Image (cartoon, rainbow, N blue to C red):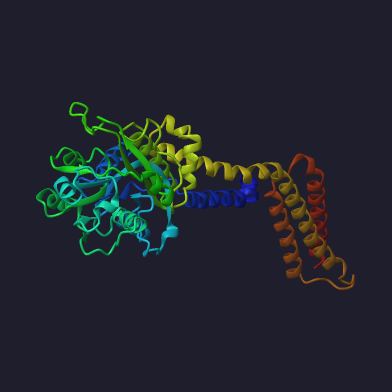
Length: 441
């Protein structure tokens, strides 16, 4: 066995080094902590973030939530590498902040986020003589809050005001946090406020049921969706908010933006796939504005869809994930790739290994004959009337013995025994010749 190891040990060590290298590249063990940028406490992003904390904990991943003002801040945090993943509206990034956006990829669209524009009905009646409004232009000159800096709704509202012909720099426009804006709206210190959130948000439900607060009906919802591609027109059928009170009394039109789950492109692939699968559990259900199974989806986004996410959408979970816990399944998946890579090396070695060994045996016999020929030449080129010193003859004899030792270390295949015995016989002939000369030295 030791004779074979001398030949194949370099190959074995090479395979081990290849395995270690592949494990380092494939990184089979994902991190156990994930930093997720969400939104303000009570906002839809923060509520969904808490659900991700619970779901990911079942797979042994600790999720650290990073509250923020909204989409623009979340994207900035993700681009800067301060978080690993973020919830954000499509089109919600700050157009003036483009640094490091190439490091961000999307795991798909996860839900629709309606834009809610609430206003005081007494202001509407005083200015327009009616309590139901349906145009953004009807808010001109009003004390309007469009969202705090860092929120995606602020950027969206600035675009809506601009294409509607209103001045985004109107001094009556404020940029307060939504909780403070809601307080001021109800206190009469604001005339209207806009924010984007899921219909289950406590703030949305509070304002929908507050007497004297109206909801803007977007008569131009379809038009806005064609001017701004991230906008989706949606409707609220009569009675959807409160069927007993028949709220709303007639169909209303809103606009919404799709929310996406974004990650750093260098986030461990297993965590990316896990996030997609958890998103399918969290966001697949129906609500006011989406049908069951409509989300999440790999739809269009301002950021490219990640390759690992695309694979999950196309093929679903791997076979290991159907039977094993997340960490074990991840290890098996990554090791499978490593084994395939190694097989691409091992199979040729199994085919050509014996041939390589044959060549090595022939080469060692050839080299032994070269050494033996050099010894024989030293003996035969010495004139017959001159004798080599005994020390020189002893050195030559020792070389032949070393040749015998080296020959004994070769695991000689049966088909090459003739060459083996021929070399051994020739070594014996040279040894006897040396010994004969030593007898006369």
